[in-house]
Image (cartoon, rainbow, N blue to C red; front, side):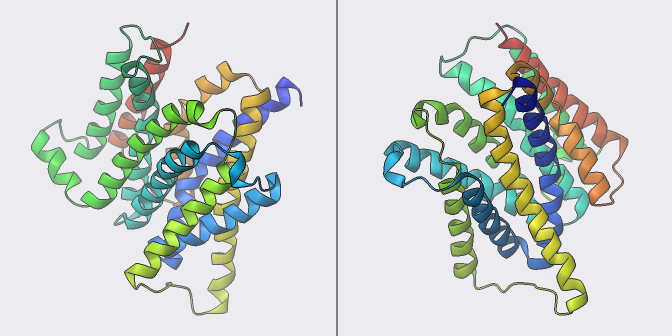
Length: 297
């Protein structure tokens, strides 16, 4: 594995992850929010185990399995349900972008915990990202707190899950390295996520909203395989990239993911996005880049 190949795998992972929110949303429209997410993560778990094999749980640090697993599964469940519970596709794209607050939140948590030093660029970066989200929620009609709150109140569950998920993932990113002690439990964490989703599905008493006609069954199966493959291949490629790729380049490109993900979502979900949305997405991206710049040595 050369550095060039490792870097290309990292870029591929960023591209794959950018398509994941729209694919999860599309399949949830067919199978339901909870059942759809459970099926996606179950199949992705099988793919990950096939790609990377299965390591006995006793070989992982216990605190990593408990704390890291809870944070990882909590984030994945929150994001999947936030996308599935969105009232329409436009709102699903907004929820997906809200998830991209995690890069600046990660930097902020690293600085607050004393594990990372930052320059004065950190504060404007955080403010830019928050301003971008507020601008999207305002619909471009001005940064009135009342107006933003009214728009968020249209679906507080989806917006709340997305914001909470961003905080969970930022916490996971800060905690995973010291807890893991060099191990990687991504496959067990995916299995845990699928188990949590199936438990929620069983306890909720819902049924799978599967298509009844064979004509629509094949497209649904294709969506399921595509969404699971994107998740599994994205994580597998990213881990190889971390070991062999150009990390500085990958870090810079990854902070442009909000705009890339929004573009993929608009195309896949066939949804026209307003100018105010793109302005907000640009602000979130600029804020993330400022936070990254604030921690560069």
